[in-house]
Structures are given as structure tokens and as C-alpha cells.
Length: 272
Ligand SMILES: [Zn+2]
Image (cartoon, rainbow, N blue to C red; front, top):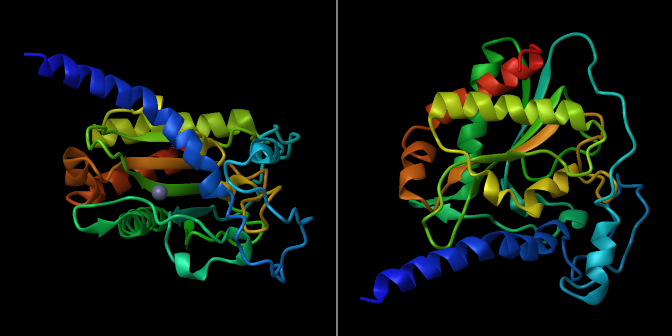
């Protein structure tokens, strides 16, 4: 008879632990690693900060906090002419990472799929929908082009959760954004359209530091990153570890792609 209470307590502990765990993992994901090759990228002229602190070491938090301060305001990247969008398929082509991004993780898995496969499928379906509307689209791998610029950048991921209980989607913009109001508009537009079209619930409580300080946003640390004035966000389109969400991520990716594409189209049209 104690089992229900134990279950409730266990779920509560998991719920409380989730953000902490995500935060604890964050430095591993964005930091490349202390064991990364020391050879610099030929195209990279940012000041190097080697050796990187070991993840979890006393100096690691201070080191990464340097990159969490707000960027100075920047003009919004908005050249006239055809709209261009970068859709990053998270974790795709991890075998082609430059030295500065060495150590990025492979993401989640579920339903017989690796996360990158699901992300790439979503990115390609979204690209097709946008291209049909006259938008130029770059489907990008885990490594962004150096100092990448477009009218919008969206990193597409699918989440993982060891309990298998969490489901839903969430969206975030850089915590240090140079254009916070614009990025907020992008996030809100994506939230509204994705929720309306897919019917999936929002999972805002589990937006992690890993999302808000996503490596591809960190142009101060990495050459292979998106330039500060580019509107940018990251979406966790659903949980690959959730049987419910897999019905969408794997079973009906066109629906999810329509949600993402509508949000992007409305943002580009200035119709949040
Ligand atoms: Zn991911």
C-alpha cells in the first residue's frame, strides 16, 4: 500500500532533478572538452583559451560564465532580397566536427532511431515547405559554418528523458542575446504556431542551460557559430524517449515540420 506514495515521491524527485541534471551536463556538451585536440582551426581567429578547464573543476563555472554575459546590442541581420533560413539538424555529422567542437554528444535515441536521424528528417521536411514559399534554406549539420548569417537560425533537436515520462516540446533563445526582443518574438511565434498545429503540450519547465547557452549561439567562444545579430532559437520538438511523442517525431514528422515552418514563415512575414 505504500507503493503509490513511493511512486509519487520518485516522480517528484525526478522532476526536481531534471533541470539540475541538465544544468550539470551542460558544460560537457558545450565545452568540447579538456582532452580536445590542441590544433587550431585554420579558419578560426578567435583568441584561444586553452587549456580548457576540466568539466566540473572549480574553475570551469567561472570560465563558462564569461560567455553567459549579455552580448552588446547588435543590428538585426536583415538584408533585402530573398529570405534565407538556417535549419540545423542537431547532432548530424558528428564525425566531421572541427577541433573546437570536439566532444559534442550524440543526443538521445528511441524507437530505433538516433536523434540526428529524426532531427535531419524534420529539418529536410521543414526546408521543403519553406522552399515552396520562396525561402532559401540551408540544412546545416552539428557544425555551423564560421560566423553563420541568415535571416533566421533554428537548431532542431529531439529530447531524451531517462524516466520516459516527460513529453512535449520547448523552445529557447540565447540567454546572452544581442537582440533579445527580436529573439523573444521568434520564440513566441514558434511556440504559438507549433502548439496550434501539432497539439503537443509545452514543456517550458524543462528548458535547460544547455538550450539557452547552446554552443552554436556562442560566437564569443567558437568560430563555428551563428553571428550575434541573426535571430536564433533552438527547439526540442518532442521527446524521443516518449511513446506519445514518437507517434509524431517518427510517426507523423510532416505535422511537426508544418508547425515549425509556419512559425518561421510568420516570423519572416512579421506576423507573430
Ligand atoms: Zn539534441
